[in-house]
Image (tube, rainbow, N blue to C red; front, side, top):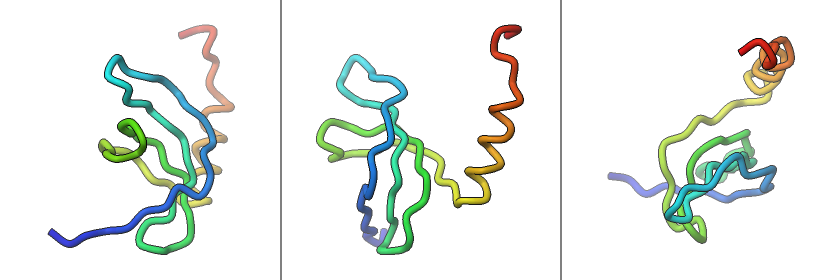
Length: 76
């Protein structure tokens, strides 16, 4: 398996924390020295390990924001 590089360029927030110290985070991440993208995933302590997640480019991020803004969370 080929090695990949990542750099968290901006920590935007923590959505939740598990009992073993893992946190679901929203960050801007540069993968393999490319331009940063919005990234949502679980991270282990010290960002030593990561879980599966989702990475969105700017257009996807904006569309997701529009969809979330339209939701009525009170009726859920």
